[in-house]
Image (cartoon, rainbow, N blue to C red; front, side, top):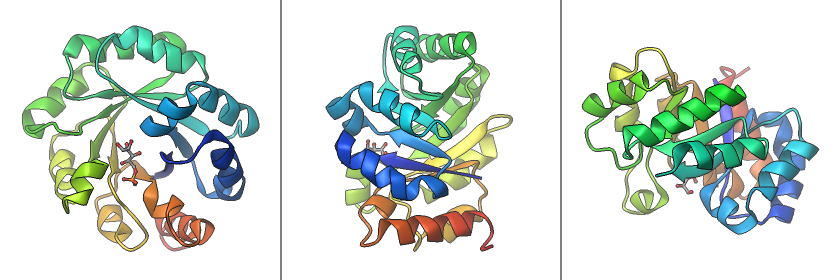
Length: 211
Ligand SMILES: O=C([C@H](O)CO)[C@H](O)[C@H](O)COP(=O)(O)O
């Protein structure tokens, strides 16, 4: 299981400093949607340059012009790019075609997909690499978590990797680990913790089965 650190609310300078302390606990670093809006593709370029050992996911949440937008993120050095599960199949296919050309990966964010049973097999048939259940920040504020969606999606995904995101922290991680997702995504749980390094260490340890 991989740990993906989502950086959403830091600026580029803060992110580079924070990553120096967290890099040893992280497998994938996510240039989150607010972060990429603020810092652009330069964030992907600089993180790849300073931390070549980290895979970078560019969370652009593509909704249209799939091939072109995915290409922009891949050209900056991202290994993973996100597209929205609610969008058109042609957009997802465009992202997948670009990823295959460049030897990279597409993660589909299923935020706001209401019928997972119907949508997951279609999304999987388009050749994507990872399908992520995601309870967004605004849904989290209304008290929701991604746990039920993770339980449900595990029933429908056949051959691709599964990721989960949405307010996960060391306090709640065990329920997610029990469902064995391939990628566990944590943002505010680490970066808004009183001690982000301690929190990242706790989560990384839990991912390794407490060792
Ligand atoms: O994708 C995200 C969200 O939509 C803001 O862009 C977050 O990166 C994702 O939810 C993980 O962050 P936390 O929920 O704070 O763990």
